Image 1: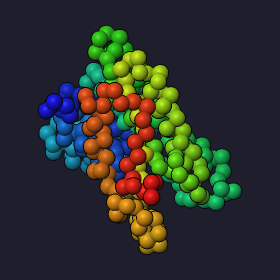
Image 2: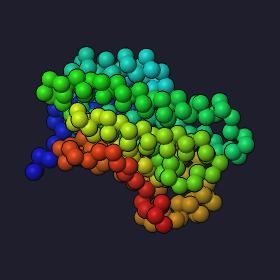
Image 3: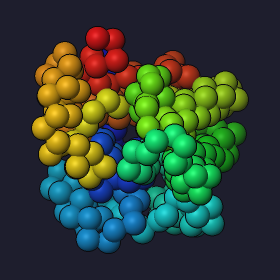
Length: 259
């Protein structure tokens, strides 16, 4: 059992892996021996993330991939397979938010912009990774882990943020459906629901004294979560320990949603 969380030889993709929750997950995977590929749309942040992860001694790559572009996702998966021959875990973490608006001011264009990355990008990333995992399973080398990052906004009222909450609720439903469809190929599919976490997306809120008092002050564990708080769950879901764990929605929020 001592090697239960050893990821040596495994290849993991983390979209949006150059900051926040994504780099926290990517670093955990790298620390446990996985080859890690980061997708992001900022070349400088990608390079900095690769340098940080490479310090753990493993193989790290990055690519400029916009997950809202289906062709770019397909090409990106092809490049990974061309270099490494396999993908054992795909974490669809890339996502965006918008400034909060009164629901009557949320346009369909606002909705579509969020959907293009938060839903369509998640779907195409996991679908293309699953396509490879199924082929590998067919020749006796199957299995794999698919993970999508949703949000606690999917399960509690996200006032003035209805479109964001809706996209994250869709991610949970998507993962549950895929979990059932892919189980026969020994592919697990799970979603992760972060609470209030320090990242570029929450930068303005971190500086808001009233928000910190009224919202972050209610987090039972105290304070903001950090990207590194997601290293463990990424490693677990990629490991042998999670072989029979699928279709779940794992809340990591310091106790906020139960308080």
